[in-house]
Amino acid sequence: MSEIYSVEQKLVPFNGAELLGVRANDGKVYVGVKWVCQGIGFDKNHSDAQVKKIQTDVVLGQGASNLTLPTNGGRQEALVIELDFLPLWLAKISITPSMQAHQPEVADKLVKYQLKAKDVLAAAFIHNGFNYDDLSPELKAIFAVDKKMQQLDSRLEHLENHTTIDYAQQRLLRKAGNSKVVGVLGGKKSAAYSDNSIRSSVYSALWNDYQEYFNITSYCNTYTKDLERGLQYVPHWTPPTNLLRRIEEVNGQTLF
Image 1 (cartoon, one colour):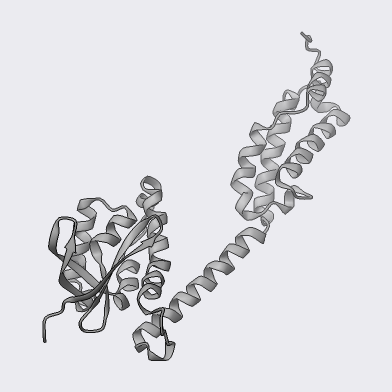
Image 2 (cartoon, one colour; image 1 turned 45 degrees about the vertical axis):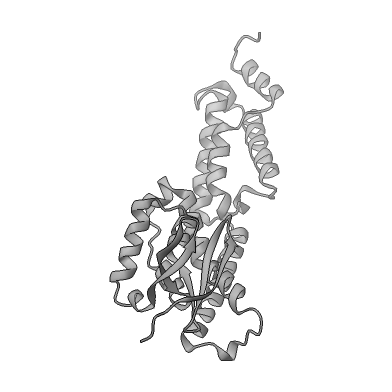
């Protein structure tokens, strides 16, 4: 096989960084591995591990090549991977719980690269005269998978934004509310707690403020995505001043 060399090279802006795209003399578009790793935010050790992974992987190795490219430090040899193989490589990089906990920005960027990097590079190199029917079966399959992933993401986002909490979650929220009300009233043995009027007023004030804050008509209509915020809101809720004074008076406390 003849030597592969660059005939066109582009730095393509993406997600606050740049992707190095290369069209080679074999007609294929390649991506600079180093630039992808830097854009995601990998340190040198992680970047070196990805280079080794690509070179040793049975499948990814088939799409990898070393090209001599002009860089700020002069012409240097760099590992590149075919555009068709880019999504497969990125999909093999796991977003672990540790990464999500300690490197949330890296995890977020990795997701964006997994979903969009290939499209951006494809648009930069094959936008003009682009014909879906001329693509290889492999690239067509990648486009189809990406489309389904985007549709799935859209559906999941819609569900998350419009699904309300279930009965068990309602009970959890109600339990938090009960605990807060009992505490505000001074405990179940307090005079304020025994006063149905005051107890009802505290419950009403709590859930009215809650509903106004989350823009809903009942705490039962809390959106699933807001449950954790709701469980944090309730313990930190404070009754209106006048209601606090009524509680103090009924409990026989001295007003200052």
